[in-house]
Image (spheres, rainbow, N blue to C red):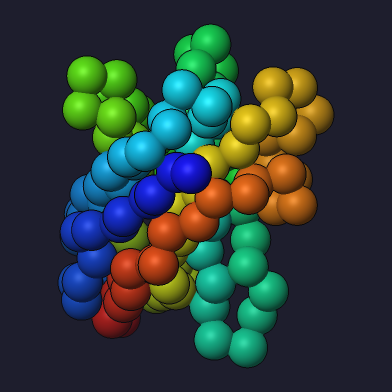
Length: 125
């Protein structure tokens, strides 16, 4: 099994920055890709960014240029640096792990079988 624990959420103003962390433990060797998803009130959970063991990174268009995903393999931790935050970024952010290696699956929520508990990010205008 794999456990994922997020941290770093909070309340910020528009234009501010936050860095989310996701610490993985357990059978992490099974995880090929770690990603971030978010869910705003009344909306479906959506893909935000993903980082593959091979080095490939993926982003949803709405965060490109503002968010950066990175990982520290020694710490089994993936980060999401969020800059120039907007009110529409307000959501619960979830870390997720996938064992699927295909590029096609990077943004596919159904291919992520491991999930953290989520961390709230609120951006005020």
